[in-house]
Each structure stands twice: as structure tokens, then as C-alpha cells.
Length: 95
Image 1 (cartoon, rainbow, N blue to C red):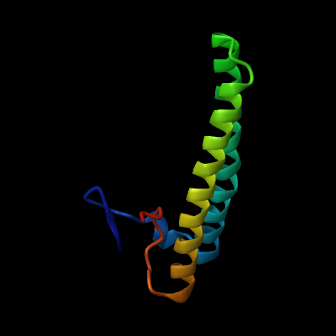
Image 2 (cartoon, rainbow, N blue to C red; image 1 turned 90 degrees about the vertical axis):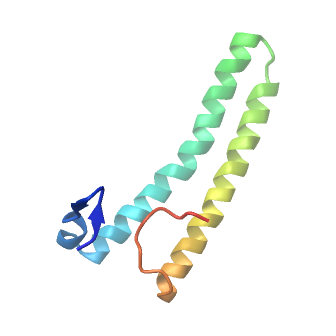
């Protein structure tokens, strides 16, 4: 049984591997578009506030796309290592 914060982690013992994998994939499915939508929204409101339309929208959306792409590459590396069996942990990818 794995320990988290000094306590035993019973959650991973009660979940099937399919549920753990589905949770990871759902996290990726919401994280990547959420990053891009967040860049769009923040850029739009900053443009409205500063009157710089559309420059901050374009800049922040581009930055969000780059951030989402970097995160996607990390997720792909994590899932590849996990599938090959070289990394048995089910945590967040830290490259």
C-alpha cells in the first residue's frame, strides 16, 4: 500500500487499473482545451480592459497553445513510459 502524506493510500487499492487510466485520460481531455480556452478568455478581457484589441488575445492564445503543446508532449512521454512498463507510478508527469 502506497503512502501519501504519511497516511496509507487506500484509493489506489480500491480502483481497478481501467478506472485509474480513464481518470488520467479524462484529465488530459479537460486540461489541454482548458489551457487554450483560458488563454482566450484572459486575453479577451485584458484587451477589453486595456483597449489593445486584438493583440493581447493573440499573444495569450499563442502562449496557451504553446503551453498546451508542451504539456501534451509530457503526457505522451508519461503514457509511453507507463505502457512500456519502465515507470510503474500513476502520478503526474514531472519531466
